[in-house]
Length: 68
Image 1 (cartoon, rainbow, N blue to C red):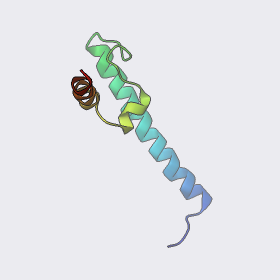
Image 2 (image 1 turned 90 degrees about the vertical axis):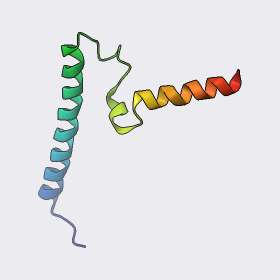
Image 3 (image 1 turned 30 degrees about the vertical axis):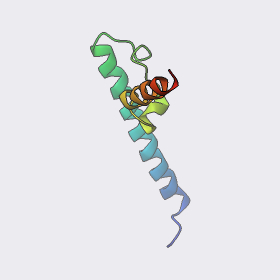
Image 4 (image 1 turned 60 degrees about the vertical axis):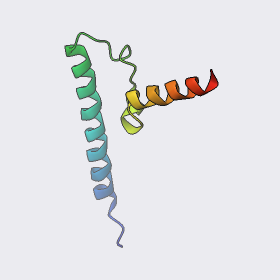
């Protein structure tokens, strides 16, 4: 597999960063249009790459049930 020239690698990186930024800002704007605060909804930038909040809360609830 051939290595891309520097300018093409930078173009790919810029396209990826732009896609991430658009997704992030669309989430913030959706939250604001619902009269909610982005932080109050319980999300942050890195949540886009992880498990959805409702699944984390479900796992947390199951773990608490097993403790008690």
